[in-house]
Amino acid sequence: MKKFSNVELERIQSFKNKNFNTVHRSSLLVPSFKGSETIITFLNHFLIKRKINEISLKITALNNSGKRISSNTLSIEKPKVYEINLSSMFTNEAKNYILEFYSANNLAIPFPAVIINHLGKNFCNSVHSYNRVLNDVFENDSQNKIKVSEASVDVLINKTFDTFFVFSSGQEEVKNQLLKLVYLEGKKVIKKNIVLNLNRLSYKKIYLSKYLKKINSNGVLKIDQPSQNMFYGRLMVGRENKKNKSFSANHSYYDNSKFKEYLKSNKSFRTYPYFENFINKISMYPIMSPSKLQIKIIVHSLKKDYIASDSIFISPSNATFNLNINEYVEKMNLKNITAFSVLATTKKKEIPSRINHQLIYGKNNSKNSLNSSINLSLKNNSIFKKKLKKFYKWGQLIAGDNYDSKIGICLDSFSSKNEKILFKLYNKNGKFKSKNYTIEPKKALILDPKNILKNKKILDFFWFSIECKNNDISAYVVHSNKASGNTSGEHNF
Image (cartoon, rainbow, N blue to C red; front, side):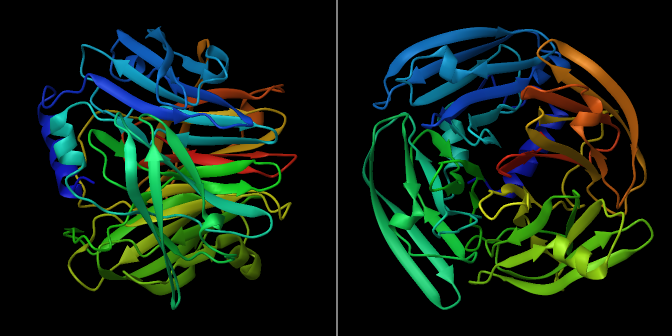
Protein backbone atom coordinates (compact mmCIF):
# COMPACT_ATOMS: atom_id res chain seq x y z
CA MET A 1 0.00 0.00 0.00
CA LYS A 2 1.11 3.55 -0.71
CA LYS A 3 0.53 6.20 1.95
CA PHE A 4 -2.35 8.50 1.07
CA SER A 5 -0.10 11.50 1.70
CA ASN A 6 2.35 10.17 -0.89
CA VAL A 7 -0.50 9.71 -3.39
CA GLU A 8 -1.48 13.34 -2.78
CA LEU A 9 2.11 14.56 -3.12
CA GLU A 10 2.53 12.79 -6.46
CA ARG A 11 -0.75 14.27 -7.72
CA ILE A 12 0.45 17.77 -6.83
CA GLN A 13 3.88 17.26 -8.37
CA SER A 14 2.44 15.78 -11.57
CA PHE A 15 0.02 18.69 -11.89
CA LYS A 16 2.83 21.22 -11.57
CA ASN A 17 5.21 19.32 -13.85
CA LYS A 18 3.75 17.14 -16.63
CA ASN A 19 7.07 15.33 -17.03
CA PHE A 20 7.32 14.32 -13.37
CA ASN A 21 7.75 10.52 -13.01
CA THR A 22 6.14 9.83 -16.37
CA VAL A 23 4.34 6.53 -17.06
CA HIS A 24 4.72 4.75 -20.42
CA ARG A 25 3.25 1.33 -19.63
CA SER A 26 -0.14 0.68 -18.09
CA SER A 27 -1.21 -2.90 -17.39
CA LEU A 28 -3.74 -5.26 -15.83
CA LEU A 29 -4.41 -8.97 -15.40
CA VAL A 30 -7.75 -10.48 -16.44
CA PRO A 31 -8.87 -13.93 -15.21
CA SER A 32 -11.01 -16.26 -17.30
CA PHE A 33 -13.76 -18.21 -15.51
CA LYS A 34 -15.58 -21.33 -16.63
CA GLY A 35 -19.18 -20.59 -17.60
CA SER A 36 -18.68 -17.02 -18.78
CA GLU A 37 -17.14 -15.09 -21.64
CA THR A 38 -14.34 -12.66 -20.76
CA ILE A 39 -14.86 -9.28 -22.42
CA ILE A 40 -12.88 -6.10 -21.78
CA THR A 41 -14.04 -2.66 -22.89
CA PHE A 42 -12.60 0.83 -22.67
CA LEU A 43 -13.11 4.26 -24.15
CA ASN A 44 -10.09 5.69 -25.94
CA HIS A 45 -9.67 8.39 -23.32
CA PHE A 46 -5.99 8.48 -24.23
CA LEU A 47 -7.01 10.29 -27.40
CA ILE A 48 -10.23 11.98 -26.27
CA LYS A 49 -8.91 13.33 -22.98
CA ARG A 50 -5.11 13.45 -23.32
CA LYS A 51 -4.79 13.87 -27.12
CA ILE A 52 -2.43 10.87 -27.34
CA ASN A 53 -2.92 9.26 -30.75
CA GLU A 54 -0.24 6.58 -30.61
CA ILE A 55 -1.19 3.78 -28.22
CA SER A 56 -0.40 0.08 -28.55
CA LEU A 57 -2.28 -2.59 -26.62
CA LYS A 58 -0.51 -5.93 -26.28
CA ILE A 59 -2.74 -8.79 -25.13
CA THR A 60 -1.08 -12.02 -24.01
CA ALA A 61 -3.05 -15.20 -23.32
CA LEU A 62 -1.64 -17.46 -20.61
CA ASN A 63 -2.31 -21.09 -19.82
CA ASN A 64 -2.75 -22.55 -16.33
CA SER A 65 1.02 -22.79 -15.94
CA GLY A 66 1.51 -19.10 -16.61
CA LYS A 67 3.09 -19.78 -19.95
CA ARG A 68 2.30 -17.73 -23.02
CA ILE A 69 -0.09 -19.24 -25.53
CA SER A 70 0.12 -16.30 -27.94
CA SER A 71 0.03 -12.51 -28.07
CA ASN A 72 -1.86 -10.00 -30.17
CA THR A 73 -1.05 -6.29 -30.49
CA LEU A 74 -3.65 -3.68 -31.43
CA SER A 75 -3.31 -0.03 -32.37
CA ILE A 76 -5.61 2.20 -30.31
CA GLU A 77 -6.14 5.24 -32.50
CA LYS A 78 -9.84 6.09 -32.87
CA PRO A 79 -12.15 8.10 -30.54
CA LYS A 80 -14.51 5.21 -29.83
CA VAL A 81 -15.30 2.28 -27.55
CA TYR A 82 -12.98 -0.70 -27.89
CA GLU A 83 -14.69 -3.98 -27.06
CA ILE A 84 -12.48 -7.09 -27.08
CA ASN A 85 -13.85 -10.56 -26.45
CA LEU A 86 -10.78 -12.34 -25.06
CA SER A 87 -12.57 -15.69 -25.07
CA SER A 88 -13.06 -15.44 -28.84
CA MET A 89 -9.63 -13.98 -29.59
CA PHE A 90 -7.75 -16.92 -28.07
CA THR A 91 -8.22 -20.67 -27.52
CA ASN A 92 -10.11 -22.26 -24.64
CA GLU A 93 -6.72 -23.13 -23.15
CA ALA A 94 -6.36 -19.52 -21.98
CA LYS A 95 -6.94 -19.16 -18.23
CA ASN A 96 -5.51 -15.70 -17.67
CA TYR A 97 -4.62 -12.64 -19.72
CA ILE A 98 -2.15 -9.81 -19.29
CA LEU A 99 -2.99 -6.52 -21.04
CA GLU A 100 -0.31 -3.87 -21.53
CA PHE A 101 -0.83 -0.37 -22.94
CA TYR A 102 2.32 1.32 -24.29
CA SER A 103 3.08 4.85 -25.45
CA ALA A 104 6.06 7.17 -25.90
CA ASN A 105 3.82 9.85 -24.40
CA ASN A 106 3.01 10.11 -20.71
CA LEU A 107 0.05 7.86 -19.87
CA ALA A 108 0.02 9.45 -16.38
CA ILE A 109 -1.72 6.52 -14.65
CA PRO A 110 -0.19 3.01 -14.44
CA PHE A 111 -3.67 1.51 -14.01
CA PRO A 112 -5.61 1.59 -17.31
CA ALA A 113 -9.26 2.69 -17.32
CA VAL A 114 -10.51 -0.73 -18.44
CA ILE A 115 -13.65 -2.59 -17.36
CA ILE A 116 -13.48 -6.38 -17.09
CA ASN A 117 -16.79 -8.05 -17.95
CA HIS A 118 -17.65 -11.69 -17.32
CA LEU A 119 -20.79 -12.45 -19.32
CA GLY A 120 -22.69 -15.63 -18.45
CA LYS A 121 -26.23 -16.94 -18.49
CA ASN A 122 -28.45 -14.33 -16.80
CA PHE A 123 -25.57 -12.26 -15.40
CA CYS A 124 -22.87 -9.84 -16.47
CA ASN A 125 -20.30 -8.87 -13.85
CA SER A 126 -18.31 -5.68 -14.37
CA VAL A 127 -15.26 -4.56 -12.38
CA HIS A 128 -12.50 -2.09 -13.19
CA SER A 129 -8.84 -3.18 -13.39
CA TYR A 130 -7.55 -4.08 -9.92
CA ASN A 131 -4.11 -5.72 -10.18
CA ARG A 132 -1.00 -5.44 -12.33
CA VAL A 133 2.65 -6.30 -12.84
CA LEU A 134 4.59 -3.23 -11.73
CA ASN A 135 6.65 -1.19 -14.17
CA ASP A 136 9.99 -0.89 -12.35
CA VAL A 137 11.79 -1.31 -9.02
CA PHE A 138 10.96 2.27 -8.03
CA GLU A 139 7.26 1.60 -8.33
CA ASN A 140 7.80 -1.59 -6.36
CA ASP A 141 9.46 0.45 -3.61
CA SER A 142 6.47 2.78 -3.29
CA GLN A 143 3.61 0.30 -3.76
CA ASN A 144 4.88 -2.53 -1.59
CA LYS A 145 6.56 -0.62 1.23
CA ILE A 146 3.58 -0.83 3.60
CA LYS A 147 1.99 -4.25 4.15
CA VAL A 148 -1.69 -4.36 5.13
CA SER A 149 -4.47 -6.92 4.85
CA GLU A 150 -7.25 -6.74 2.27
CA ALA A 151 -10.82 -6.29 3.51
CA SER A 152 -14.23 -4.72 2.70
CA VAL A 153 -15.78 -8.07 1.73
CA ASP A 154 -19.56 -8.68 1.89
CA VAL A 155 -19.52 -12.16 3.41
CA LEU A 156 -22.46 -14.53 3.04
CA ILE A 157 -22.47 -18.34 3.17
CA ASN A 158 -25.73 -20.31 3.07
CA LYS A 159 -27.51 -22.94 0.98
CA THR A 160 -27.76 -20.64 -2.03
CA PHE A 161 -24.67 -18.43 -1.94
CA ASP A 162 -20.96 -18.69 -1.30
CA THR A 163 -18.40 -15.93 -0.93
CA PHE A 164 -15.18 -16.14 -2.94
CA PHE A 165 -12.03 -14.20 -3.62
CA VAL A 166 -9.43 -14.50 -6.36
CA PHE A 167 -5.75 -14.48 -5.45
CA SER A 168 -3.49 -13.68 -8.42
CA SER A 169 0.22 -14.31 -8.77
CA GLY A 170 2.65 -11.93 -10.48
CA GLN A 171 5.65 -12.72 -12.65
CA GLU A 172 7.12 -15.11 -10.05
CA GLU A 173 5.63 -18.36 -8.76
CA VAL A 174 4.13 -18.45 -5.28
CA LYS A 175 5.60 -21.44 -3.48
CA ASN A 176 4.44 -22.68 -0.05
CA GLN A 177 3.29 -19.20 0.96
CA LEU A 178 0.66 -18.61 3.63
CA LEU A 179 -2.54 -16.66 3.02
CA LYS A 180 -4.17 -15.83 6.36
CA LEU A 181 -7.90 -15.37 6.95
CA VAL A 182 -9.35 -13.64 10.00
CA TYR A 183 -13.12 -13.43 10.44
CA LEU A 184 -14.57 -11.25 13.22
CA GLU A 185 -18.22 -11.17 14.24
CA GLY A 186 -19.21 -10.03 17.73
CA LYS A 187 -17.17 -12.15 20.11
CA LYS A 188 -16.47 -14.70 17.38
CA VAL A 189 -12.89 -14.78 16.01
CA ILE A 190 -11.99 -17.37 13.39
CA LYS A 191 -8.48 -17.71 11.99
CA LYS A 192 -7.49 -19.92 9.07
CA ASN A 193 -4.26 -20.36 7.12
CA ILE A 194 -4.20 -21.39 3.46
CA VAL A 195 -1.01 -22.72 1.88
CA LEU A 196 -0.61 -21.35 -1.65
CA ASN A 197 1.33 -22.90 -4.52
CA LEU A 198 0.74 -21.08 -7.79
CA ASN A 199 2.54 -20.80 -11.08
CA ARG A 200 3.50 -17.32 -12.22
CA LEU A 201 0.76 -15.18 -13.80
CA SER A 202 -2.03 -17.46 -12.68
CA TYR A 203 -4.77 -17.32 -10.06
CA LYS A 204 -6.64 -19.35 -7.48
CA LYS A 205 -10.35 -18.88 -6.80
CA ILE A 206 -10.93 -19.54 -3.10
CA TYR A 207 -14.39 -20.25 -1.63
CA LEU A 208 -14.90 -19.28 2.01
CA SER A 209 -17.29 -22.17 2.66
CA LYS A 210 -14.26 -24.44 2.69
CA TYR A 211 -12.93 -22.59 5.72
CA LEU A 212 -15.96 -20.99 7.41
CA LYS A 213 -19.36 -22.44 8.34
CA LYS A 214 -22.76 -20.95 7.55
CA ILE A 215 -22.72 -17.14 7.91
CA ASN A 216 -25.87 -15.04 7.50
CA SER A 217 -24.59 -11.63 8.58
CA ASN A 218 -21.85 -9.31 7.47
CA GLY A 219 -18.92 -9.89 9.77
CA VAL A 220 -15.45 -8.48 9.17
CA LEU A 221 -13.21 -10.58 6.93
CA LYS A 222 -9.51 -9.71 6.65
CA ILE A 223 -7.22 -11.42 4.16
CA ASP A 224 -3.48 -11.24 4.62
CA GLN A 225 -2.02 -12.30 1.28
CA PRO A 226 1.68 -13.11 0.81
CA SER A 227 3.94 -10.35 -0.47
CA GLN A 228 4.92 -10.51 -4.13
CA ASN A 229 7.85 -8.75 -5.72
CA MET A 230 7.04 -6.46 -8.67
CA PHE A 231 3.31 -7.06 -8.31
CA TYR A 232 0.41 -4.98 -7.00
CA GLY A 233 -2.75 -6.93 -6.35
CA ARG A 234 -6.12 -6.18 -4.92
CA LEU A 235 -8.39 -9.21 -4.64
CA MET A 236 -11.44 -9.79 -6.74
CA VAL A 237 -14.14 -10.56 -4.13
CA GLY A 238 -17.80 -11.42 -4.49
CA ARG A 239 -20.72 -13.79 -4.07
CA GLU A 240 -21.59 -16.76 -6.25
CA ASN A 241 -24.78 -18.73 -6.73
CA LYS A 242 -23.80 -22.30 -5.85
CA LYS A 243 -26.24 -23.86 -8.31
CA ASN A 244 -25.81 -21.90 -11.54
CA LYS A 245 -22.36 -20.29 -10.85
CA SER A 246 -23.55 -16.76 -11.61
CA PHE A 247 -21.63 -14.19 -9.56
CA SER A 248 -21.36 -10.52 -8.66
CA ALA A 249 -17.94 -9.24 -7.62
CA ASN A 250 -15.87 -6.11 -7.14
CA HIS A 251 -12.46 -5.56 -5.54
CA SER A 252 -11.18 -5.56 -1.96
CA TYR A 253 -9.69 -2.59 -0.12
CA TYR A 254 -6.87 -1.87 2.32
CA ASP A 255 -7.33 -2.63 6.01
CA ASN A 256 -5.97 0.60 7.52
CA SER A 257 -7.06 -0.21 11.07
CA LYS A 258 -3.45 -0.67 12.25
CA PHE A 259 -2.06 2.18 10.16
CA LYS A 260 -2.44 5.76 11.39
CA GLU A 261 -2.93 8.36 8.68
CA TYR A 262 -5.26 11.34 8.89
CA LEU A 263 -6.43 14.46 7.10
CA LYS A 264 -6.45 17.87 8.81
CA SER A 265 -10.22 18.01 8.80
CA ASN A 266 -13.12 16.70 10.85
CA LYS A 267 -15.60 15.95 8.05
CA SER A 268 -15.74 13.60 5.05
CA PHE A 269 -18.75 13.10 2.78
CA ARG A 270 -20.21 11.79 -0.46
CA THR A 271 -23.59 11.80 -2.18
CA TYR A 272 -24.96 8.82 -4.09
CA PRO A 273 -27.91 8.25 -6.44
CA TYR A 274 -31.05 6.59 -5.13
CA PHE A 275 -32.39 4.25 -7.82
CA GLU A 276 -36.11 3.51 -7.68
CA ASN A 277 -37.04 -0.17 -8.03
CA PHE A 278 -33.54 -1.10 -6.82
CA ILE A 279 -32.19 -1.97 -3.40
CA ASN A 280 -30.08 0.96 -2.12
CA LYS A 281 -27.74 0.08 0.77
CA ILE A 282 -24.54 1.17 2.50
CA SER A 283 -22.14 -1.23 4.25
CA MET A 284 -19.12 0.00 6.17
CA TYR A 285 -16.37 -2.09 7.74
CA PRO A 286 -14.12 -1.01 10.66
CA ILE A 287 -10.95 -0.84 8.57
CA MET A 288 -10.17 2.90 8.84
CA SER A 289 -7.21 4.27 10.74
CA PRO A 290 -7.98 4.15 14.50
CA SER A 291 -10.89 6.51 15.06
CA LYS A 292 -14.31 7.18 16.54
CA LEU A 293 -16.62 8.46 13.81
CA GLN A 294 -20.14 9.78 13.80
CA ILE A 295 -21.82 8.41 10.67
CA LYS A 296 -24.97 10.06 9.32
CA ILE A 297 -26.97 8.85 6.34
CA ILE A 298 -29.04 11.71 4.94
CA VAL A 299 -31.88 11.08 2.50
CA HIS A 300 -32.70 14.02 0.21
CA SER A 301 -36.22 14.73 -1.00
CA LEU A 302 -37.27 17.70 -3.14
CA LYS A 303 -37.98 19.97 -0.17
CA LYS A 304 -36.42 18.39 2.91
CA ASP A 305 -33.50 16.33 4.22
CA TYR A 306 -34.10 13.33 6.46
CA ILE A 307 -31.53 11.69 8.73
CA ALA A 308 -32.03 7.97 8.14
CA SER A 309 -29.26 6.95 10.53
CA ASP A 310 -27.03 8.69 13.08
CA SER A 311 -24.60 6.40 14.87
CA ILE A 312 -21.09 6.05 16.30
CA PHE A 313 -18.67 3.89 14.34
CA ILE A 314 -15.40 2.73 15.88
CA SER A 315 -12.38 1.39 14.04
CA PRO A 316 -10.85 -1.03 14.73
CA SER A 317 -13.68 -3.15 16.09
CA ASN A 318 -15.73 -6.23 15.23
CA ALA A 319 -18.87 -4.26 14.36
CA THR A 320 -20.04 -3.40 10.84
CA PHE A 321 -22.45 -0.67 9.76
CA ASN A 322 -25.29 -1.62 7.41
CA LEU A 323 -28.27 0.44 6.32
CA ASN A 324 -30.97 -0.34 3.78
CA ILE A 325 -32.06 3.10 2.55
CA ASN A 326 -35.23 1.66 1.00
CA GLU A 327 -36.55 0.54 4.36
CA TYR A 328 -36.29 4.08 5.73
CA VAL A 329 -37.87 5.62 2.61
CA GLU A 330 -40.79 3.18 2.78
CA LYS A 331 -41.21 3.63 6.56
CA MET A 332 -41.38 7.43 6.21
CA ASN A 333 -43.47 7.16 3.01
CA LEU A 334 -41.05 9.51 1.23
CA LYS A 335 -41.56 10.48 -2.41
CA ASN A 336 -39.32 11.86 -5.19
CA ILE A 337 -36.07 10.59 -3.65
CA THR A 338 -33.13 10.60 -6.08
CA ALA A 339 -30.10 10.89 -3.76
CA PHE A 340 -28.69 10.21 -0.30
CA SER A 341 -25.45 11.26 1.42
CA VAL A 342 -22.95 9.64 3.75
CA LEU A 343 -21.41 12.06 6.26
CA ALA A 344 -18.57 11.12 8.66
CA THR A 345 -17.41 13.54 11.36
CA THR A 346 -15.10 13.44 14.39
CA LYS A 347 -14.75 15.54 17.52
CA LYS A 348 -11.03 15.77 16.80
CA LYS A 349 -9.34 18.06 14.29
CA GLU A 350 -8.37 15.15 12.05
CA ILE A 351 -10.17 12.31 10.31
CA PRO A 352 -8.94 9.06 8.67
CA SER A 353 -7.61 9.72 5.17
CA ARG A 354 -9.42 6.67 3.79
CA ILE A 355 -13.02 6.13 4.92
CA ASN A 356 -14.01 3.19 2.78
CA HIS A 357 -17.39 1.49 2.33
CA GLN A 358 -19.58 -0.49 -0.04
CA LEU A 359 -22.37 1.06 -2.11
CA ILE A 360 -24.86 -1.75 -2.73
CA TYR A 361 -27.53 -1.85 -5.43
CA GLY A 362 -29.69 -4.80 -6.37
CA LYS A 363 -33.09 -6.16 -7.30
CA ASN A 364 -35.56 -7.30 -4.67
CA ASN A 365 -37.61 -9.54 -6.96
CA SER A 366 -35.91 -12.78 -6.00
CA LYS A 367 -34.20 -14.23 -2.93
CA ASN A 368 -31.74 -15.90 -5.27
CA SER A 369 -30.55 -12.72 -7.00
CA LEU A 370 -27.11 -11.19 -6.50
CA ASN A 371 -26.52 -7.57 -5.50
CA SER A 372 -23.75 -5.34 -6.79
CA SER A 373 -21.27 -3.99 -4.23
CA ILE A 374 -19.21 -0.99 -5.39
CA ASN A 375 -16.10 -0.14 -3.36
CA LEU A 376 -15.76 3.59 -2.61
CA SER A 377 -14.20 6.11 -0.23
CA LEU A 378 -15.57 9.37 1.12
CA LYS A 379 -14.40 12.74 -0.22
CA ASN A 380 -12.84 15.51 1.90
CA ASN A 381 -12.32 19.22 1.26
CA SER A 382 -8.70 19.03 2.43
CA ILE A 383 -7.76 16.74 -0.48
CA PHE A 384 -5.84 18.48 -3.27
CA LYS A 385 -8.05 19.79 -6.06
CA LYS A 386 -6.68 20.60 -9.47
CA LYS A 387 -7.56 23.96 -10.97
CA LEU A 388 -8.54 23.23 -14.55
CA LYS A 389 -10.89 24.84 -17.04
CA LYS A 390 -12.57 21.49 -17.70
CA PHE A 391 -12.76 18.14 -15.92
CA TYR A 392 -13.46 14.83 -17.61
CA LYS A 393 -15.18 11.72 -16.18
CA TRP A 394 -16.06 8.54 -18.05
CA GLY A 395 -17.40 5.02 -17.53
CA GLN A 396 -19.05 1.93 -19.01
CA LEU A 397 -22.77 1.44 -19.58
CA ILE A 398 -24.53 -1.83 -20.44
CA ALA A 399 -27.83 -1.75 -22.30
CA GLY A 400 -30.22 -4.29 -23.82
CA ASP A 401 -33.76 -5.62 -23.58
CA ASN A 402 -32.71 -8.23 -21.01
CA TYR A 403 -31.19 -5.68 -18.64
CA ASP A 404 -32.53 -2.90 -16.44
CA SER A 405 -29.75 -0.30 -16.44
CA LYS A 406 -29.34 3.11 -14.83
CA ILE A 407 -26.80 5.94 -14.65
CA GLY A 408 -26.81 8.27 -11.64
CA ILE A 409 -24.78 11.50 -11.63
CA CYS A 410 -24.27 13.45 -8.38
CA LEU A 411 -22.39 16.38 -6.94
CA ASP A 412 -20.22 14.80 -4.22
CA SER A 413 -20.99 17.52 -1.68
CA PHE A 414 -24.58 18.48 -0.86
CA SER A 415 -23.39 22.04 -0.20
CA SER A 416 -22.20 22.54 -3.81
CA LYS A 417 -23.83 24.88 -6.33
CA ASN A 418 -25.64 23.85 -9.51
CA GLU A 419 -23.26 22.53 -12.15
CA LYS A 420 -23.68 22.30 -15.92
CA ILE A 421 -22.33 19.19 -17.62
CA LEU A 422 -21.96 17.93 -21.18
CA PHE A 423 -22.94 14.27 -21.34
CA LYS A 424 -21.76 12.17 -24.32
CA LEU A 425 -22.34 8.58 -25.38
CA TYR A 426 -19.91 6.43 -27.40
CA ASN A 427 -20.14 3.04 -29.07
CA LYS A 428 -17.83 1.00 -31.31
CA ASN A 429 -18.25 3.57 -34.09
CA GLY A 430 -17.50 6.62 -31.95
CA LYS A 431 -19.57 9.40 -30.37
CA PHE A 432 -23.22 9.26 -31.37
CA LYS A 433 -25.10 11.38 -28.81
CA SER A 434 -24.48 14.38 -26.58
CA LYS A 435 -26.68 16.49 -24.34
CA ASN A 436 -26.36 19.26 -21.76
CA TYR A 437 -27.70 18.79 -18.24
CA THR A 438 -27.65 20.72 -14.98
CA ILE A 439 -26.73 18.81 -11.81
CA GLU A 440 -28.26 20.12 -8.59
CA PRO A 441 -26.89 19.47 -5.08
CA LYS A 442 -28.80 16.86 -3.07
CA LYS A 443 -30.35 15.59 -6.27
CA ALA A 444 -29.02 12.94 -8.63
CA LEU A 445 -29.56 13.05 -12.37
CA ILE A 446 -30.93 9.58 -13.16
CA LEU A 447 -30.65 8.46 -16.78
CA ASP A 448 -32.28 5.35 -18.20
CA PRO A 449 -30.58 3.91 -21.32
CA LYS A 450 -33.92 2.73 -22.77
CA ASN A 451 -34.91 6.40 -23.03
CA ILE A 452 -31.63 7.25 -24.77
CA LEU A 453 -30.99 4.18 -26.90
CA LYS A 454 -34.12 3.50 -28.92
CA ASN A 455 -34.89 -0.08 -29.91
CA LYS A 456 -31.73 -1.50 -28.32
CA LYS A 457 -32.62 -5.17 -28.01
CA ILE A 458 -29.25 -6.92 -28.05
CA LEU A 459 -26.94 -6.59 -25.05
CA ASP A 460 -24.20 -4.11 -25.89
CA PHE A 461 -21.44 -2.13 -24.20
CA PHE A 462 -21.40 1.66 -24.35
CA TRP A 463 -19.28 4.28 -22.65
CA PHE A 464 -20.27 7.74 -21.48
CA SER A 465 -18.23 10.86 -20.77
CA ILE A 466 -18.98 13.88 -18.62
CA GLU A 467 -17.33 17.25 -19.19
CA CYS A 468 -17.72 19.82 -16.41
CA LYS A 469 -16.02 22.68 -14.57
CA ASN A 470 -16.45 21.09 -11.14
CA ASN A 471 -14.27 18.08 -10.34
CA ASP A 472 -16.55 17.05 -7.48
CA ILE A 473 -19.00 15.21 -9.71
CA SER A 474 -19.32 11.42 -9.75
CA ALA A 475 -21.30 8.95 -11.83
CA TYR A 476 -22.50 5.46 -10.94
CA VAL A 477 -23.87 2.76 -13.22
CA VAL A 478 -25.88 -0.31 -12.35
CA HIS A 479 -27.33 -3.08 -14.52
CA SER A 480 -29.61 -5.91 -13.51
CA ASN A 481 -30.59 -8.97 -15.53
CA LYS A 482 -34.38 -8.96 -15.80
CA ALA A 483 -34.72 -12.75 -15.69
CA SER A 484 -32.51 -13.44 -12.67
CA GLY A 485 -32.24 -10.09 -10.89
CA ASN A 486 -28.44 -10.52 -10.79
CA THR A 487 -26.92 -7.03 -10.55
CA SER A 488 -23.52 -5.47 -11.09
CA GLY A 489 -22.30 -1.88 -11.02
CA GLU A 490 -19.33 0.45 -11.01
CA HIS A 491 -18.25 4.04 -10.48
CA ASN A 492 -16.76 6.34 -13.10
CA PHE A 493 -13.08 6.84 -13.88
